[in-house]
Length: 102
Length: 415
Ligand SMILES: Cc1cc2nc3c(=O)[nH]c(=O)nc-3n(C[C@H](O)[C@H](O)[C@H](O)COP(=O)(O)OP(=O)(O)OC[C@H]3O[C@@H](n4cnc5c(N)ncnc54)[C@H](O)[C@@H]3O)c2cc1C
Image 1 (tube, helix red, strand yellow):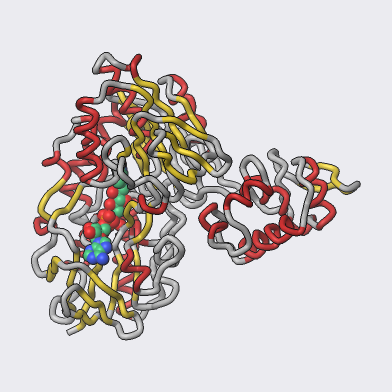
Image 2: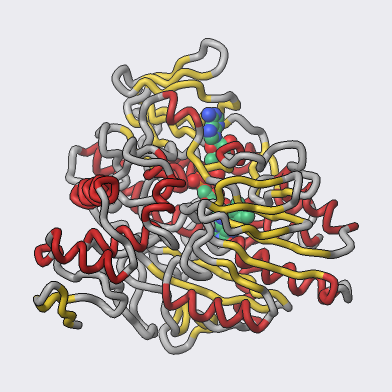
């Protein structure tokens, strides 16, 4: 599916997740965040960076992982990305929705 | 003489001992297996014990019965693996040397990971059914429970046998119906996942069943703590679910031994090659079953498929041949749905559970993703197959190690 974000055509799946990470940048990120009613702050960017790092290393994301991330604690994570923080944060970070592989 | 040591005599370790004893030349290899318990538990039976469907006798047997002659069986706690010295340290001062090591120490519940879970109400109105003790204590509770809010809960993924909590909810529905007290019991299924199961196709079918049985679903619930004083579980978003009886599947973790030996990930699982079953860090150490970090279901059926490939790979390793990268994540699970019926799902790393027939394409007799009495018979027969074939390493007829795609309506998982 195509979607227009920041005046550009972006490929997304039916849930709105980016299909091609190469199309992601800070501008796109802010547009998606805006759609989720989230205003990006310094702390949000730190989390996005952490998520990208994990994604690059093919390490699965989990709530437990957030606890050990050293970036934020779980409570803060929920405050930054209210309502399903892992799903929201990955949507905004432009990577696939975390799936439980089992 | 060379030494092959197997750590853990559960489903996987016992199967490996049975496979290898006939394959390794006796004049060259000693095989040793170590476990802390004398008892071999039939863990799938822990699902039925709380409902008085199985007796305690049906779920445990002496481990010794299943270890083949010629294998050295040690009943001791394993303290430490020293991978750089090729040694294993047991309780007391005993040490074992190995040329090849197989880690099969499984996974177990860790209720203390969540505040308030194994506090003063543990086994009073908070239970697990993943241990023999938990399942038995819950049976005693259910015999006299007069009803109220029953919450069936998963703490975090991954857990072994990811369908077991759903089956528990379905069986609870039947159990209370049979006791003519279903109207006094409110059943809620609480999960950290976005739906009833980890795979979308199966989730749809299972969601429908939950609805049909009047079981409520609370999804995306990441538990923060159990408020045992006020009988409720609370998640990080401050959502609360009240209970009178909480049946939870606590965090599952590999044994502390793995952590002590510095060989595990966050959850004490051993990083393992998902196709060859060789550990990532040590070429003479292999891992199988629930102890690995494989992105496959932690289930006896999966371990059974793994065992056939691991046996081949151990022989190849000994001969200095390249390992077969063949394990495809094949899982094959019956899902008890209550009232003498069950579903069957069959999937692997890349294919979702689908509709179709099993094991014979187009014939069955088992139906995938559809409730039937035949599937239930299959599940019940599994106990016999387990004790008499599976852990003895006897190949189960008609069921192939790698998933077959024939007779199935297939859909590939898109990543
Ligand atoms: C409620 C429930 C229902 C299930 N239903 C099904 C089902 O329907 N179908 C299915 O296929 N699977 C099912 N399973 C899963 C199945 O039982 C497991 O996946 C299987 O037993 C895994 O085998 P394993 O050998 O890897 O681990 P285990 O069988 O758990 O064996 C591990 C062994 O290692 C030993 N060990 C660990 N640490 C140490 C140490 N430090 N020292 C000494 N010994 C140690 C333990 O004592 C244990 O005997 C179910 C599990 C549960 C709990």
